[in-house]
Length: 100
Image (cartoon, rainbow, N blue to C red):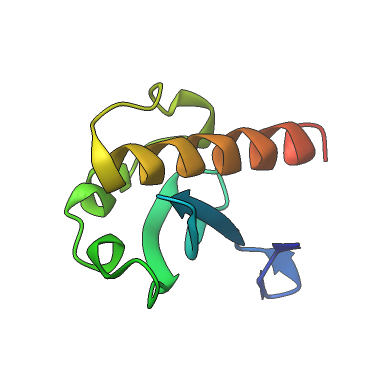
């Protein structure tokens, strides 16, 4: 589900909750953007099964990046799993909303 908050009855941005997987265990992330689809934040929501996801430093690097300009997934370990999930979510968001 793509959430679109309103301000003065106009879209103010988007938010998307999406799954990621690391070593066969699921965790969830929240991606929030401004109206131009630039990322405001990426944050873990439920990472109890993957506690290292909650401690990752990779989230800060997404701030200000347009969802259609996200780099290819990179890194190792949990950071790679986060990068892959964010790239997929950003692509989905862009494809769904670019002509909306």
